[in-house]
Structure formats: structure tokens, C-alpha cells
Image (tube, rainbow over all chains, first blue to last red; front, side):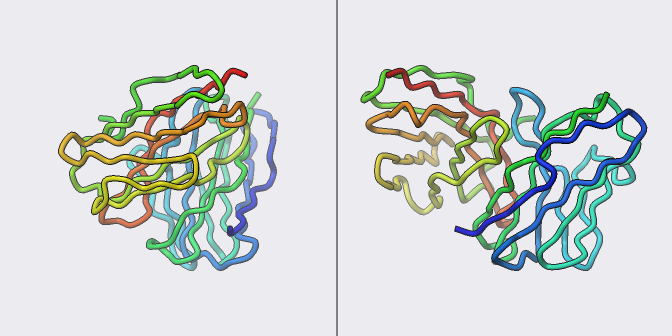
Amino acid sequence: GAVVSQHPSWVICKSGTSVKIECRSLDFQATTMFWYRQFPKQSLMLMATSNEGSKATYEQGVEKDKFLINHASLTLSTLTVTSAHPEDSSFYICSASDRGLAGELFFGEGSRLTVL
Amino acid sequence: DQQVKQNSPSLSVQEGRISILNCDYTNSMFDYFLWYKKYPAEGPTFLISISSIKDKNEDGRFTVFLNKSAKHLSLHIVPSQPGDSAVYFCAASGNAGNMLTFGGGTRLMVKP
């Protein structure tokens, strides 16, 4: 199946710094990518829908100024956690579809963020 | 309000037996349901799906059953293997295509 890759897999940062997580579709073009967040022992919560060439659509309760999403090309979306705080520590997962909203979703490996 | 619920946070099964994971949903607009398997520190991987026009879909050891009137679906794994030990998420989507709503997950442990 299609491959979606995330980088970095693990990141530890100091409180107040910004962290960028990349999500790449390796063998297909993704017009739409989704970013999820998972707290320990909880479900995956959709944060935002990333649309190539346009602004991301954020879910209710997600601060768009804190979680900056850029989808500059058909194979790359980035999530930047700005001015990170310990409560932002979480597992962030991206997913992408090879056929827009109608296609099967493929998930990245996830990125674990720990903010000290 | 959780639209997709997995009421059992964990399940332990003996190798070779059947594993049954359950999922309930409340949104009648959901018309496509999926099961994902997730290992620690990894992203979910797709397992099996079912459209609302069907009530059963089978793929090898995995079978998903859908009861629309009860808004309930279940995943059966027969026979269960130790390698099946993971967290299983059910997910649902509606008119918005593949924008998924996930359940809370069930941790399956298959004992040798």
C-alpha cells in the first residue's frame, strides 16, 4: 500500500520553543492530509485537515495559531507546534489519502513530542 | 459527546480462540466503518472496512459485522494469534468522506 512517513519520530524540546513535524507521502500525491493527536490511553483526535495550496481547516477547540499547518506541496505537510508547553506533549499522527476525500487513508508512523 | 465508542478498554484471549471487539456509534450519518490496528509508538494500520450497505465483510481471519439498527459493529478475529496483540480502533466516516471519527480503542492481548 501507499507509504506515509513522518519525521521526526521522537522529539524532546524545552518549554517555549517551537517544533516542526513533517508528514510526507512517499509514493503518491496527497491533496488532503489529516493531523491527529493522541493522548496516552485515549483515542486519536482529529486536529485539522490540511489542504494543498490553501489554509488548513481546524477542528473546534484546536488553536490554529499554536498548531501551524502548512501544506506547500502534494507530498508534504508540516505541523509546527509554536511556543510549546508541557501540556502539548503528545503523540501526533498524520494521514493522507491518494484520492482526496474519497480515498483510503494511510497513516504515518507518528511523532512523539515531549516538552520539558 | 463521543460519537464512536469502544466500551471495553482491554480484552484478553487465549491463542487459537476467537477475539471479538465491539464498537458502538451514535451518528446515523456514518456510512462507512473501519478497523485499525495500532502498535505502541506507531501509526495505525488499516485492517478491514465495511460499508453501510453490507452487514458483513470478511478478510482472512478478520470479519467485521455491522448492525445498523443497533448502531453496532464488531470485529472478529479467528483464530487469534499472539501477533494480533495490539490496540484496535474502530472508526467511522459519513458524508465527508474519509474524515474519520475514532473510538477510544481496545487493547487486545492474545496469550500463547
